[in-house]
Length: 330
Image 1 (cartoon, helix red, strand yellow):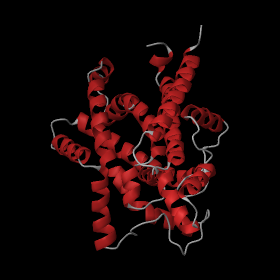
Image 2: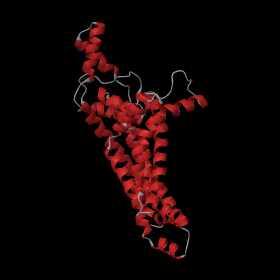
Image 3: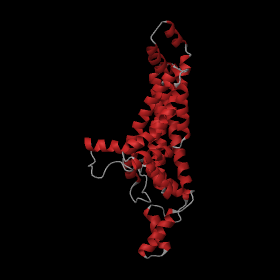
């Protein structure tokens, strides 16, 4: 019989394969033909017939004219297995190179945002659950409802207009200034943080509200457990009960969600990064969709799906590691 870990790995591989296949066919069913537009441009600039220009454009990106879709599909699978994600139709460079340049910026901004949102939201959620009858409860619920209902690009646009355009406290776009030399040095790191401040806030502001509600619900369920009542009966200090008994056990449920959020961050928030012209995964994903750049779309989809699946597996294993009840089978 297969072990639990083997089953999970098998399901993960099947999920990636299905997602890969669905992505391939869906992208080719999207309206519009970027090859047609590129061929027209090539025809005008080089003075060649359209048919010849179209054949050359198709040949550049490894798709023989008239080649059946199933042959393109198997060629795509073979290249993906070998780690070759193709060439971007718009940028004319390897998709691997685009992703390699974009990943660090998305990880940089999103990891800081996710951790800030999780830490602040979880702490507030625990406090609010412990003091449910105070003014903090309705205020936190209202904040979470407003930020959850507001589209992320609206929050990003408001921050951009107030702090970048009007007050001019932060730059309008980019990941760092052109007069700074990239590298592992304090001037560059400080400048990168300066440019990333508004994108980080745009991610964190709605994230805090979500973690508040998640942690609050988890903490309230823990408050009804016998060991919490026993701790109160023993006369332990409220601070110790809230942190050691309620917070420590309530954090287990949001922990799985945190790992999944970390995995999905590779997809980036397309609209937020586009608003700030921040060169992360989300920015290029938005470009790829708008330009019908199939190879770039497929590469970004694959990375996002793989990140979510890997994060889910990691969350399962870590959950078992920190919760003795899971290791013992409940």
